[in-house]
Image 1 (cartoon, helix red, strand yellow):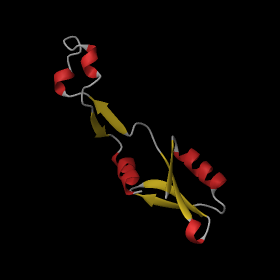
Image 2 (spheres, helix red, strand yellow):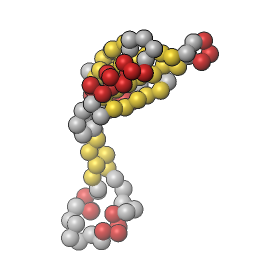
Image 3 (cartoon, rainbow, N blue to C red):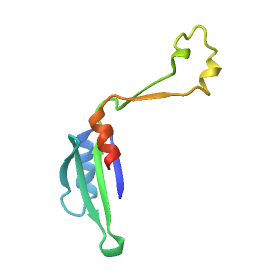
Image 4 (cartoon, one colour):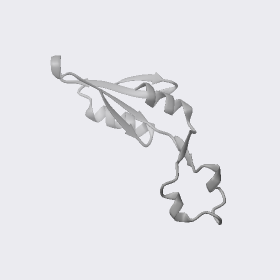
Length: 98
């Protein structure tokens, strides 16, 4: 399966309409619109899902020991772990299931 991720839902809908040989099927996955279509046939059949994002999906941060930027050498941030936190859980869940 191919997954196309766009910035906005309207872009996902338009891209799916342009690329699909027939009208794409719209479905909801975890509350998010997904536009699906197939190309080819038989062994070369390929399913594509197009989904649009909305705002920030994941937030990033450094561990607590890096919170005081005046006491941390900026070069230490290069190798520091990054903590990711889902902000828009519906979209994160939809992307994981696709």
